[in-house]
Image 1 (tube, rainbow, N blue to C red):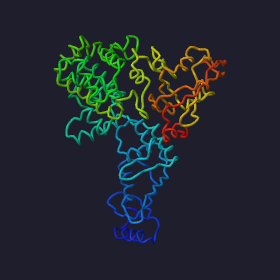
Image 2: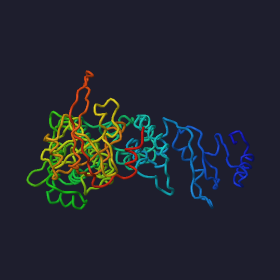
Image 3: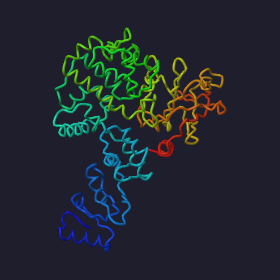
Length: 486
């Protein structure tokens, strides 16, 4: 056993014995974290809490040197540190986004690749899941530390684009601070304060567009920053150049989003949330920025943050397939689906429920929470995968085989999009699993017990049906959704 009180010569003798095979293990306390080179090590046993991703990598690094006859390194961690296990995938992937879904998905979907290939046992995954779900990755203290590190590295105040590229995901900034001006002020920076109107415009860009889930609005705004107006043909040419999916419905949706007509007055957010003014005007086959916004862009701070939000969105859009509405295995909220399916106006998430048909019956978005809360009224009828290609789901209640809504599920002209999340611990986002088709011969009426708020039970009818996916679920995603418990 080696500790910090042992002499250097005593440590060196112990290392030589290990290299010669005279001892199988060296047990160390507060030594060998760094500056030690023992290439033959093929197993590391951790008996201390994971307090730092940096220290964890240092300890792991003791076993990562190549050595003749050593094909792999085994790491055994005996300490199930509930609060800090999330630091392990953070350390191994270098993910500094502070986005819980992103950290979790990197653990879910595949082994971690790089110079080495890293696999986690299922038990280890479950422990890390628990840690991720119970840790607040967006604490102001943690974000400030990340921001300060990036500021030191850049030698200046970093923009949101800089953080998106290197560390904090812009969705965290959108959810927690609404725009980057607010975030900077929380970080103790006062350089980029803006007016109330400018603040609302930046909130629109950050919350609605900067996630990059559709490039169309971002590309138009990017062009309008350098040109007073753009002809329709020029805009379409730019969309084609960037391999964007184009349809009349999408172009109408872009107009609705940028004119803010999509955000109806009774909804939240509504048009007033984002300044009450059209961002872009589309007249006489030409696009132009709203006159008031163009005048506001003379302000250097506003221009810089306006442009920064657009650049951030275009950067983040690279993770999505621009030739498709949705990208399989990426995450979307109900509100994202609302916008990307080109619905004419915003529909609050709670009004979408388990599924929602659009107004002209072209698409239906289906949202399934796989492990429902124990007090959920639908607990007796859990939606469940039958295999990687088929999932069984239940309709809303009360419904029967003759209900108009159920007949819509039999319409082969409607495209059905399936979104699934494991549990409510996943927050608002669902993993997109692709298009699916209801299997008409699987439709069954069933009775379900429903308990109201006064604890009165009554029986209601629902319809059970199987959905067949166009693309089978990736095996790692399938295992995560169906097997893992956390």
